[in-house]
Image (cartoon, rainbow, N blue to C red; front, side, top):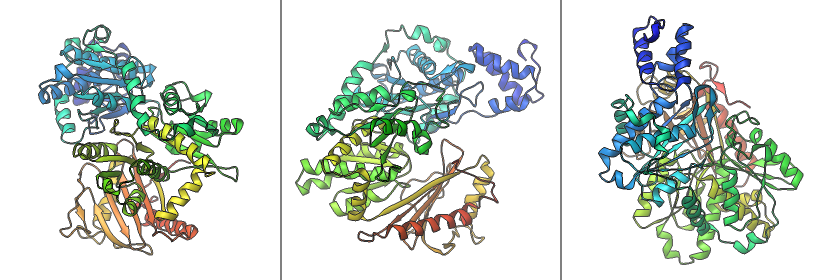
Length: 611
C-alpha cells in the first residue's frame, strides 16, 4: 500500500484503494481515505469502494465524498472522460458543435466537492479534447441546460445537480442533442466508455487552465435573454397581469430559483412575488428545512405560509432547489392552506393551457395535431379532458426522459405538444424546454391565478369545476422506505407468483376485485390480446400496475434515485358522479388493502413515509 498504509486484509478492497490513491489529486478526499485506512475503518472503506456509481438514464446521483461509490473530483473526471469518448464516437461534428454545462449551488466542504467545482472539471475534460464548452458562469436552473442544447444545436448537455435530494448528495444529469434526457441504449454505451477511461487524462485536473481556454464560452446572458423571450409566447393575458391585485409568495427553498422566477414574472408583466427572505439565497446547507423538497408538502412551506399571512397573500409557489419542479398552495376560506398535489396542479395547468390555446385556435380541425402527455403513474385527468375536447393524449413510462423524447418525436412530425406532466410536481409547458421546468410553470401559474381572480374564482373552485366537467380523479400517492434490495425483490416476486405459479398475479385485494394487471418489469399485460405490454419494459426496475373493477388504478414501483417503494392510486369517476366523500372513502379503503395485502410493511420491516 502507498506510504506504508495499513492493508485492510481484503485484497480486492486494498487494490481499489491503492488505485484510487494513485489517481486522486484532491488533497481532501485523499486524506479522508488515508485516515480511514489508519483507523482500520474497513466497513467505511467498503462503503466508499465496494461498488462504482451506476450510470443510468438519470445519469448519476450519490452522496459527495471519497471513493468510487460517491460524487467527487475523480469520479466526475472519470464519468466525463467516458461521456466525452462516447460523444466522439457518435458525433463527427462534436468539435464544431460542442456541449453545455450548468450547475446548482450544492457544496460539500469536507470533501472539497461542489457543483461549480465538478462543472469546471467536466469542462476541463472536454476542452482537453478540443471540444467547445458552453459553461455557465453562475448557478442556473436545470431547465436552462436542455434549453441551451436546443437553442444552440449542441451535441449534449450536462447539469450538475441532485435536485431535491438531501444536502450531502450531488448528481450528473445528461441531455442528448434533441434537448431531452438520454434514454437507452445511450446509458449503457456511456457506462461502458466510463469503464474504459478510468485513468485521468493529463489535462483533466486542470480546471483553472480550462477556464482560460479559448474553447470555453459563457452562455449565461444570451440564454437568459432567449429563454425569457421564449416563455413569453405562453403569456396570453398581459393586460390582466399588469393590473393584477393578487398577492403571491414564492420560495426557492435555498436553491437557484429566486432571481429566475422574479424574471419570469417580469416577462409576463405580473407583479413580483413576495420572496421568502430566509430561503431566497442559495445555501447548500438548506438550514430551514429537513428535506429541500416541496413535494413533501407543508413542512417545507411553513415560512412561506407565515410570509403570506403577513402580506395578505392567497397563493404560495415553491420551487425545488434546481427549479425544475413547482408546488402550489392556496389559502382556503376556512383560513387553512391547501397544498395541491402534483396531479391536481396537472389538471389545472392542463385545463389552462388548453383553454388559452383554444381561445386562439377556434378551428376544430387543428385539434388533430394537438397532444398532451403524462406518465403512467400520473392522473388520467388529461385523458378525460382529451376525450371530451377532441385532442390527443398519450401516456409514457415514468419520468421526463420518456415524455421529453416522445414530445420531440411528435413535434418533429408536425404536431403541437401543449403540455406534459408527472405527479411528482413536474410540468413541461413550453416546447423550448423538453423537460420539466419550474420557472416557466411558476409564471404560467401566476397568470392563471390572476385570470381566475377576475372571475372571482380560486384555484380550488376551478379544480372542482374541472372535475365536475370531466369526471373526478382522486389520487392518493405515498411510499415506504426500504434499503434492502432482497426484500424489495421478494415483495414483487410474491405478487408475480401469488398462487405459487409463475405469472399468477393476485385477482383480488381484500374486498376489491382486480380486472387487469400490467407488469413493466417482465413485459406482461393481461389487457393485451397476446399478454405483452405496449410500453417499454425494464428488468432493472420494479413496476406493477393493477386495475380494479371499481375504476381504481394502482401502481407499485421502485424509485430510480432513492431507497423507496412508491405507490400511486387513482379513482377515476365518470362525469356527473360527484359524491366526493364516498369516492375518497372507497380509495382510502383500497389503499389500506394494498398496504396490508401487497406491501406487508410489518413482515417486510418497511419504514413509512416520515410525517
